[in-house]
Image 1: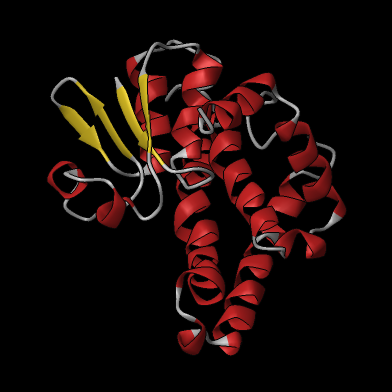
Image 2 (image 1 turned 120 degrees about the horizontal axis):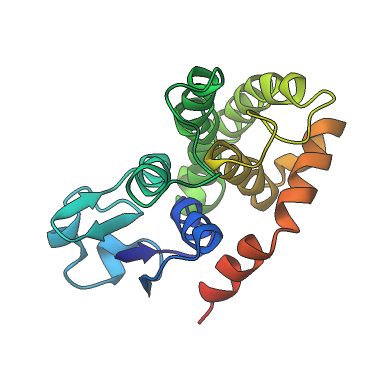
Length: 204
């Protein structure tokens, strides 16, 4: 298995999952954006996005999808939730809500605060999509009331997928507006040894 990764990008989701599962893999650390800075990357992933994950003849470029794949392909693992588990639907909902609903507005905040040249930055877009993200985070805050993890009474891939979105918010300064349950949850996730190892490996 091979994972193409940029520091603290969405590829941190599968990197963290690989570390939690203690699987063997090759990590290719790249500067961002790889489509401009890593020769040949567009041949691997024509969209130029991060991550790109290769396992034999299989290539996956969606971070939450890679986490789902790892649990299914290399399980059984407590990180996955089986189809006959009552929590399966809720598990899938969090897995895909993590990117489509939570990370999406953050990418616009990132673009218009960091990635665009100064003259193209749009403060109103930043504020609007910050509010959008924080509004969607209300569902996470509610789900964590009297709960340590999101589903199945244990740490799962859903926590990696959603936890990364909360972590990304810290790099954008959005965590100053997090509510108590999200603050507690993110702090506990960032204390996990696999999360720490993943972040250490991205600086190798």
